[in-house]
Length: 258
Image (cartoon, rainbow, N blue to C red):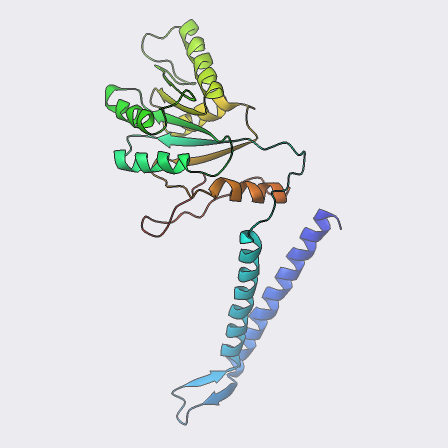
């Protein structure tokens, strides 16, 4: 069955179901029919409550079935286009982050259970007071030959002080080279806001990976977050982006997507 027809049937079916439920609720409310009640009607159970309860039960059933489908253990990851392994880069946007939060974020990125995951942290700021974030990067991820960093006086849209056209182009190439050559990379650049940070990460990565995952520098990521989001993208060609389940501190591990 064509995808467009399936989508249309789902829309029509959902709309009809909603109309039936709404009509039933209105009819039950207007008639006020009651199945059981106490002598003075302090407590009662009628058609209105029965329809609302049935609606809640149906919603819960479909939510359970969808949750079980998404969380089914042991399912192989389906690759639609080819059988080659997919490549993913995790981009972390950092700006004057609390040191402990940043450490937790980088350690959680290090624990992600995905082969050859590339991690790119872009620091929004290159002043002396921003260098502690580069130090934390070295502390957590910089102890191997796979790690690289670059402190850039500029960004892709604004030249830094004393930067010439030639040195600006050289800096752009250096950023790309560091990101492409390193499994873990950290780029410190001239302040430009979060969009500029994301632009740098995306521009530097180019077509070197199949998918890009993004998060802030105060996010603690679940080890399975990358493979779970990639599973959704690979299994449904109609899905172009996936968001994670973001939870506040103290309620489990957070998975974030922008």
